[in-house]
Image (cartoon, rainbow over all chains, first blue to last red; front, side, top):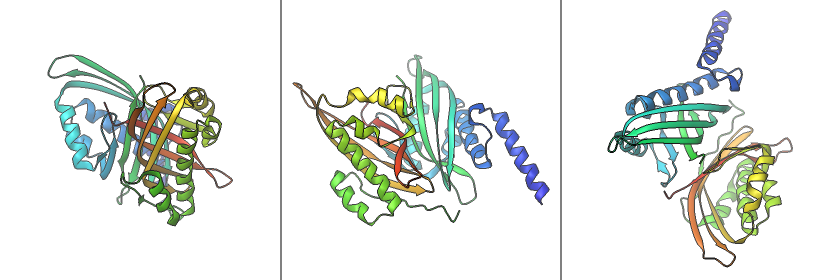
Amino acid sequence: MKRGWLIAIFVVAMSGVAFGYPGLGKLSMDQTAIARIFEAYVEAQNAQDLESWIKLWDHDGVKLAPGVPTIYGRPAIYERAMASFASTLSRKMTIELHEVVVMGDYAFADGTYTVTSIAKATGAPGSTDAKFMTILKKQSDGTWLIYRDTTSSNK
Amino acid sequence: MKKTMIIAIALIIAVGGLAAAQGAVSDMNPDAKAMSDVLVRYAKYVEAGDAESWISLWDIDGVQLAPGAPMSVGKAAIWKNNKDGFGGGEMKFNIVQQEIVVSGWYGYIRGVYDYIFTPKGGAAMAFNGKYLTVFKKQFDGTWLIYRDTFNSDKP
């Protein structure tokens, strides 16, 4: 049993290294799981895969996006993202995760991100250089989901 | 897990502002109240143009994620990037605390804010937005701002 756990921890630790967050040092299992949320976030954004993206959110998630009032709940977050995804022909997102701090059943993470995109209506290119802070909540099954998320431009 | 104390309190939903928030915090857990008090003092010091007292609310390793600029990392950088913004006119600043979560040595408060700034010899300008602030408990039991991010509700 103990050996099994040791192997599991080793595999998770190595997975963290493979994901490539050198600035974060050695990641715990929870930190690795949270880092993977951001990996999945980027993958879903780049694939414009709204269904996969919304699954990363807690049902009671709250989004604090610039330029609009607070958005409450997964259905409202989905609706707003749908409009954003629909207006974009393609997008390329990168995230640099600066820290992941686990505090019991909650955690916070922050970092910077960039997005380059092509508008569907005009074909005009767009770019974003920004930062984020996210609160994540551990679920009853041990997984983590985005609970609070806020962003702001660097320019 | 037993040590983790989670207090999620829906305080004020954009009604009543600071005075109402102060009334609601009287029944709080001491840690939640201490965090809440930091934001009350935050607004008070901003209104008074008291930069020295304001910076004393920050952890030495604090990070500010303000719109329109890269992260300010560390208390010294936060001081450098904010001290000139104090004074210069009359400020009416209102912070509404909508959610407080305490978990071990960390906690966060989410809410909305609005302020009216009247520069000397100028016309009043109104702003409103939302914020997410992470606090860290110090060894002496006090709480300081560890991460702070905010953005405008208007495009």
